[in-house]
Length: 287
Ligand SMILES: Cc1ncc(COP(=O)(O)O)c(C=O)c1O
Image 1 (cartoon, rainbow, N blue to C red):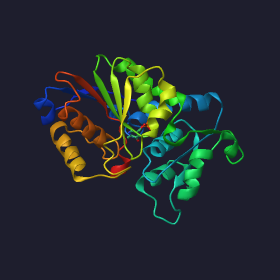
Image 2 (cartoon, helix red, strand yellow):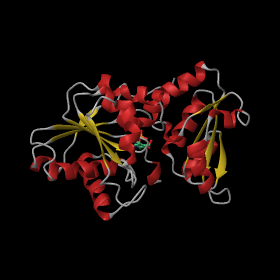
Image 3 (cartoon, rainbow, N blue to C red):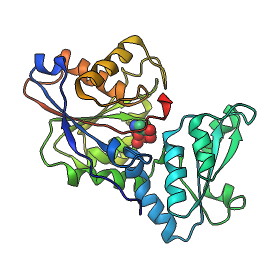
Image 4 (cartoon, rainbow, N blue to C red):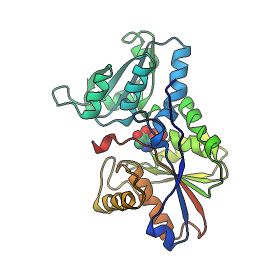
């Protein structure tokens, strides 16, 4: 398995926390590994063990130009002796992004796919479709959403030593949110959607968590959509960096912090409450 570092809980300093007497700590999952960082290793660990146990030689997945998931998968796959391949939402003729350049350098086969085909693959991809193209292959869905990914995230629970009233995490597929809510039933876990129109996640994730109700989706802090940003978000990320010397990306973690700030300032967090934010790593969007 990959050699990983411990993920510490760091006390966070920000003026808005002091003003409202709220404690915020950040679980530095971004420090777990220099490349397979944040929730990436949490989600991939048991999937890769399963692929090994099943004797699969190739890992196949899908992602976009700046995919943290593909970047982590290409590296972890190489380290663990797998071949890797990915359907990417990009044009072959376009210059590769640094993220995809790394993926290719680490041996990942890139299969360029139009937006339309990609959207179709997302819904219709089944194991049978590609076993001919990739014999002995192991399919990992976009963003890695799966029971095994959730199981990997649940391991965070064993590392959290105190009880938090709230846990916040940036959300895409929702696997990380589900794992956290399962692992920390005493906390209210908020998944801050990184993209617009995420209301459907409530219904989609419910079967994984029922009868638990200690979770919610924040759909108000996507800042215009996936990978979109604005000046409020950028200045919060800068301010956070100045106070804590920790870099946040604007795709997931910056939006998560913005949601915490609004929740504190709008009185949705009680004075004296303890909040944990998970730094899910993944700075590919900033390259
Ligand atoms: C850095 C980062 N944070 C958060 C997420 C969202 O994780 P999930 O898809 O488990 O909701 C992702 C996507 O996997 C990510 O790359």
